[in-house]
Length: 74
Image (spheres, rainbow, N blue to C red):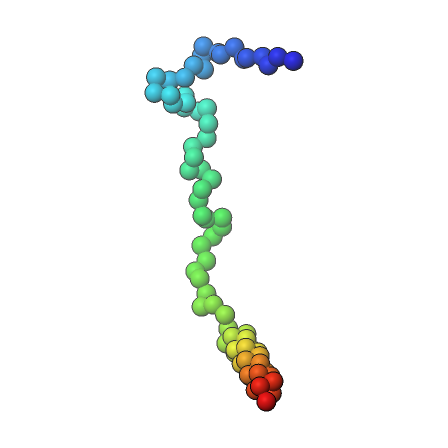
């Protein structure tokens, strides 16, 4: 099976500097914006409750492994 080569259209010939005629392709910047909706300022972040809970769990794990290491060393 042979591949057919399309015949170039003389009205769509490339421009002298290799550019594409206006209207052929959409501009590259049209879909790269970050705004997908109305602007909402950033919030402060996590509340104190989850942060304290994570710190307490981390402290409990550290104390458990410290006590476990002391018991195994004896």
